[in-house]
Amino acid sequence: MSDNLLIVGFSARAAAASAVRAGFSPLALDFFADQDLQTVGAARGVDCYPDDLVSAARDMPAAPFLYTGALENHPEVVNQIQRTRLLLGNGPAVIQQVRDPVRLANVCSDAGSPMPPMTRDSANVPLDGNWLRKREKSSGGGSVQVWYGGRHEGHRGDYFQQRLEGLSCSAVFVAVSGTAILLGTTEQLVGAGWAGARRFNYSGSIGPLNLNSTIRAAWQQIGGALADEFNLQGLFNVDAILQGDRLSPLEVNPRYSASIEVLERALGIAAVTLHVEACQGQRFSSTFDVPPQRICGKAVCYAQRDVTIDARFPRFVLQQNRALDWPTIADIPRVGTFIRRGRPLCTVLAEGPDPGAVESALQRLAATIQGFFDVPAPV
Image 1 (cartoon, rainbow, N blue to C red):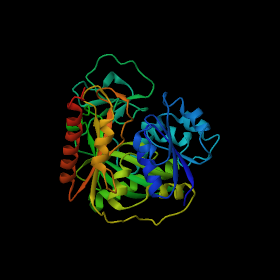
Image 2: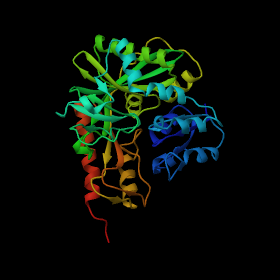
Image 3: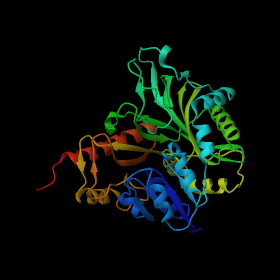
Image 4: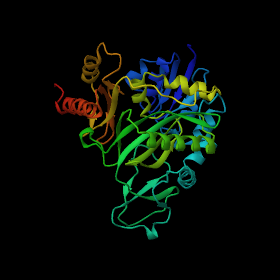
């Protein structure tokens, strides 16, 4: 298989690398056009995301396309791109339905795993810090706020949801013809201070998780209900909070998501192959039970101060990644890129015998990255 495949989103690197492993020749459009994305296929960055994606896509060679995060927040862009090329994935109508928290809550409740209580009206929301203000059109936890009251501008798509303590996790499914197969689950790292993340920022994933039969059945029930209700196609993931044997879904991302890269490495699967085949209507076995080859993880390193990437950083990364099948450092900014404090700097990846060892390895790598930028460049 050597067909072209266009990958569009805020960051395309992980999905493009997955496409290469699946035998495709990826083309990519995203906001960053990172150095390592440039090495896996024809890639182009857009200055104005997502508005410039439509015109940029017109200039790319003929190929079907799939999208990554957070293009589900812009179904109109997906709609415009699919006017001129085949979409492999979930279209605008599906996006709008599955991203509606009220409709999603009804489906999850019927599937036996209710979402945390929510409301769109702030009038009766407790002010004790146990509720969160969220937006439907958001990604990576950047817009989540603890609600203590105060001014509420009433942005369209705002809603309030009760906070739950527990394990933040995510499950990845592949859906075809109204059915869904659970590929695996990961722990989500959220607001990791050692990665430079803010309180609710997505900080990474570690997995796969070892699920008991009760939780596995609950996940499968949720995935099947979502695939059936929304007619999902291909890869999608569900974020949730796990409390003992109680699973509380939070949201659905109807596309290739950040945690898939971790499961691909741990399980030895080619997720883009599964996605393309599912979108073409190919049916799979009703179960997917691949023993993990290892425990793997990734973490997003956020800049702890304003930095400008100079030529030293790519050389440093090349040394760290030399002769490795999987990179230790990925999403490598181009020389000259200015990155503000609090914005993503790069991604680190690791594997180990257990989740604790993987998180420790990620922490060491993150410290190495931050340490590099603490050393002034030679004059």
